[in-house]
Length: 315
Image 1 (cartoon, rainbow, N blue to C red):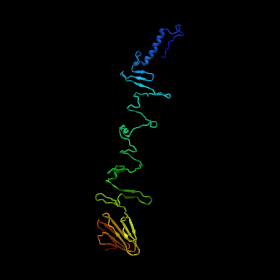
Image 2 (cartoon, rainbow, N blue to C red):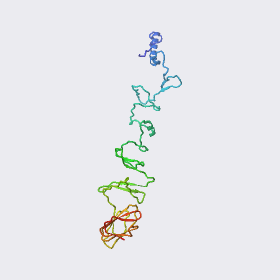
Image 3 (cartoon, one colour):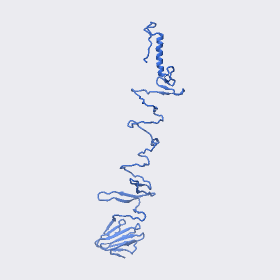
Image 4 (cartoon, rainbow, N blue to C red):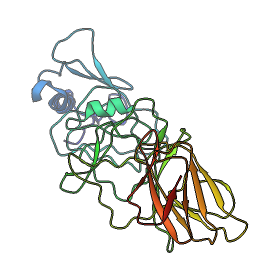
């Protein structure tokens, strides 16, 4: 209804204004209109007791009349604002209240979500977040072309194939200072597997299982060629004598370091090759003429000549 104004006339008591009855009717109509909007449950005879208007707020009493009310304020605006309520039934979300969001989309380009990893993990119902610097356990993850710097592998853990069968298994040794170093090769150089670490002289063990053997498709020994008197190399397996003048090539042979260690001697020089082991099961020394060779094996106490088909003189 349009507001009904009382005609008070052009001047007092000039008889041009509304009659008392007409003026009272307009007043009643205006109040009925207000009471219809502000009345209790639309009752035009009673004002609502649970909603009030103040100069700066709408006051909600709630179901129980008491000293506690909820006031709806607007911050002093710096521009014209529009707040649109959705076409849905629900609860208004407040900034600091503990409430559950349902069916909401958060645009992260315009919003910032803050909190600790523990808080985010508490919010998840089916897993946990992982972080760049945190210590977490990953399960059933596929890493494509990862770069791993000093990864830690638990003792007894393994690298598995895509059928989850073990390819390589790792066993930890307490206070270890030695390790395997694997190097690839460029051009015609093959890859290398080496024993490295804090130890000065390290064995590299390849152990078969049960009665199995270590099978080599093709084996080659490290070599050392000697043309002057001295000591046989302690690191090379194949010792090649190559002295062609000045008399016999005399070599000393120190004890082996590992039971089963091999030494192979060949002599391609024109002078004889004479080898004197520190400990020799067959005597004091042995001599090879040109183009002859022999094999020695260390048993932990002495060097033994084994399976020789050459012309070897033992003294």
